[in-house]
Image 1: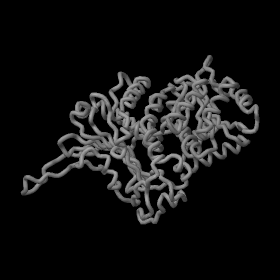
Image 2 (image 1 turned 90 degrees about the horizontal axis):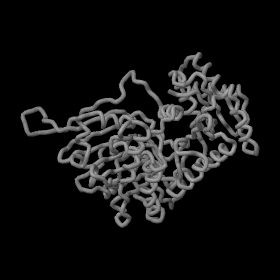
Image 3 (image 1 turned 30 degrees about the vertical axis):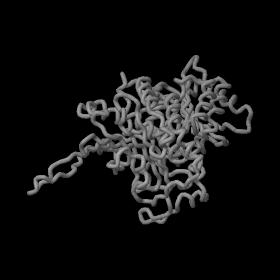
Image 4 (image 1 turned 180 degrees about the vertical axis):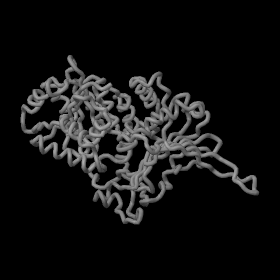
Length: 472
């Protein structure tokens, strides 16, 4: 049940709000998920007339949807208001607070979505607190903070220390939009609701786990961001470690948010630190070179960033072990790359002593497949082949909901199960920080790989056994 509330969108004129947030809120309204009297207050740094803002919203919706119900549109527009929080006005937040205090217009349960630069997170929280907007004495107050939460363990702690002066943990919603994806949430159901799988889900039966994110695209116009971030920070520290947690954590006592997050924390904190004296057998990095992909000539990464000395990785693969009785000695391989042969996010699990692979495809195809050995028909009765049993997790007629829509609903309903606890953030940074530091100090060139091809052959250095390979 969602209370009547006011959703405040900071950065409402930014790309995320235009492409995801406002169209997503309209879709939720269309589906009847928003409370009758809920308001949406968009906050920007420029003066905009309300009529012009409504026209901007209409343009966003026209670009996103082919058609939509005019009655829903009229209802949605009435929910939407705009507020200019001028950066050069020293009393901007006082005026903002006075406007929100109008109980006739704005329900006093307030959810603040900070779709702003990471450097502004702590400052905005401090300013909201200074004018009393985070006080929960009469109604709830929540703050959603966009990824990334820090750029390393040290900066994550600094950010946490800044915001916890003004917010309690139950008020903080640290977003990882991957956790809003239906296919990721389906992992727990697949694991815990099937008698075929749960008894096999341990080191007694499983040889290895691979968690993969590949893209055919390069860094595009994100060169400045990517030079400061790299593949390890961008994907493995957040999205892929969260996927690992969902695949390997113990079954929660209940599906309540606190129980789910508790098991994820336990799992992440039980991952063994990478031995730095053997790092080259545990972590591999590469950069895409110039070449051809899908018939298109593309530049290499060094030419795109215009820095021939860059050692920033566009391909990262690491090996991890979990120090508990269920997963001891099972290697878990995480890999992510730009400019590879396909767009794919998946989890593949290899069973011991057999050529059986279970694959959970997250995107673009949402399905689960099981590869088994069968006898090939014919006169030669000793010929086997691999047969794939595949089931679609999404079928025609299923409701489609964007990850941000799911997460905004959870924000409004107070469900933190798909948001990161600070201890999850700490555990993730502790794991990747030593690799980031090592790679930053190691000025040797990352392995160059050709666009549109399979994983670099050199990446196999992290495998535990010569018989292991990257699963397509």
